[in-house]
Image (cartoon, rainbow, N blue to C red):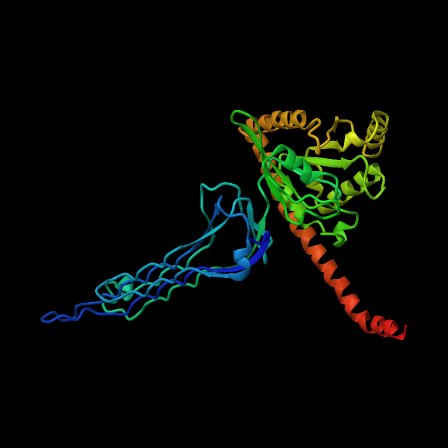
Length: 391
C-alpha cells in the first residue's frame, strides 16, 4: 500500500430537521390545537485513531465526508429522527488542523477517545412549541440550522520512541535491520529509503521501544533538494533523536561538515524539533583507525558545540549496537516514568503543539518554493529547447 502522510479533506455535519406545522384532526374533536413536532438534530463528525491503519492514502481518493441530516418533524407531536453521527478512523499519530483558521483541532495520540471535529445542526421547532394562552393556534415553526463545515488538513506523524536521521548512506536502515525485525531496503546508492520505516527493539522481558527510520537528508532540503524534508515531521513525536554520522562517506565528503549541514536543515525545518534531545552516533567505526575516530570526535564536539557523549557503532557487524540499545531503553523508561508528572507532561504537550504548526509552515513554504522553481523552469523551456536544437 502506498505510504501517504498528508491529506486535505472537507467534512460537513448534517443539517437539523425543520419543525412541522400541523394541527390535530380527529372526529368529534373540534379545534384540537397544534401538534407539529420538532425536527431531528443533524449528525456530527468525529475522528478517532485506529492502530490498524498506517497511511492516509484512502483520504486522497475520498476527500469529502458528510454526516446524516436530521429528519423533519411530523404531526401528532412526532419528533423527526436525528441524523447519525459519522466516525472517521485515522492512523495513530494524526494531527487534525483547520486550514482556514490554522487551529489545531486534535492530536490523536491514543485510541481511547473520539474527537468531535464539526457540530451537527440544531433541530427546528414545531408549531406546538409556540402555543401560548394568547396564541392557541400558532402557525409558526422554525427551520433546522445548517451543520458546521470545515476544511481539514490531516498530518500523520509516526509514533516512535527513537528517530534516526542523517545523510543518505549513513547506515540508518542497516542499523534498524540489525536491532529489530524490520527489513528496509539497503543498497550502495543514495536514497534507498523512500518512506519511513518502523522497527520494534526488544532489550529484555517486557522492555522494548520503537525506532523510526526516515529517508536521508542533504544540504538544501529546505528548498526541496533530494526528497526535501517533509519526512522530518515523523521525528517530532519521538522521545529522542539519533544523528547517525558516517565515519567514511562513500563520496569522500567530510563527516563533520555533513553533520553540521544536517543540523542546520533540522533547525530550518523546526526550531522546537532541533531542541529535542539528540545523540550523536558514529557509524562504520570498523572501517577506520582508532586515531581517526578520536580526531572525528574532537572535530564534531568543536564544530557542533557538543558536550555530550558520542557513541561508536558498526551497524553492519553489530559492534556497539547492543550497548547503544540498552542506553536508549534506560532513557526512554525514565521519560515514561516522568510523563506521570503533570508539569513534565504539559511541557511535552506544548512542544508537540508548537512542532505541529512549525511543521505545517515549513511544508507550505517548501511547496511554494517548489512551485516557484517549476514555474521558472517552464517559462524558460522554450529558450532552452531552442538552444539545444541549435547545437
